[in-house]
Length: 405
Image (tube, rainbow, N blue to C red):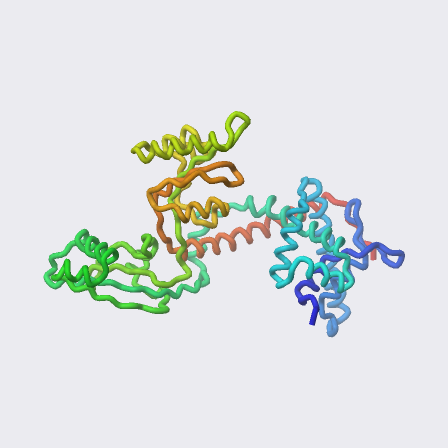
């Protein structure tokens, strides 16, 4: 059937503001704006009231009216604060809604109109909804500060939901029969194993036996603490550092997991064209810098001198350890394809022209970061709810609100 999905119907009906007609009536005045009876009825249609009593129905209506008054106050506040939603932002939101429902934008428009809704009105009410969200974000969410003490206290005193942490691991253990090997020698042997394979390593180190085992679909939180600690950061081969256990010198290789992300240690230089310097002049500067660095000069000195990204320039162009999700597409493509220890060719982003230096790459276990971010979200949400309630209470005290029975 060519019907709009139920979530879209509810979303559109919920947002729809009907055109005022002679049969409609005003049920509340909020400063210089009104709330219509038809708005309350539209909200009421989204609730199953078949078996509710008159007292319950009256409470439901009062709750809906309070919700409409709150939205009106927020709409007015967003207007006063100059919060605007551009047509581009609005269209991007429409694309997200359509994608979420498995539709094209045109199909979404057609389905909305087939259900008797004005697409223009739908867009305008959606714009108001986005403005209210932006109001909450700028006034409350962005200002909600969560301290390290609060995070640690929450983790200590509350059960934090476990994340899916199943992992496939290959375990390498050196059996040192004569206890002659130290940690440094074990690391060298494992380096040989990574580069040359097991057979070559056995030939080069005949006195040591390497025992290899695979653990499939095991929860990382069920592993011994020493394994979990060493699985926090992996090298470019997805291997841990060498560490010692009761079994012997050990190295782990992660074969499969959803808890690890690649991180890149990157520095860059940003330049822009101007009337005096076109693209070729900027590229020529970059090539001179690249040649100088290849000749042994320090990349950071050139970043401090030339880069227009002053935040990173004072740190020698360093962006620190970053994931590919933190940078724009054009920067990401160059970053992930630049070999470690090399400087990229000049490339362009929306910010200007860059060269980047990839100092190192690693794979990081994101479990604790994800868990901490969950806790931060919980604590922020609590603070936002309290701040929003207090703010709305003050807003109501300062507003002219008249409910017409």
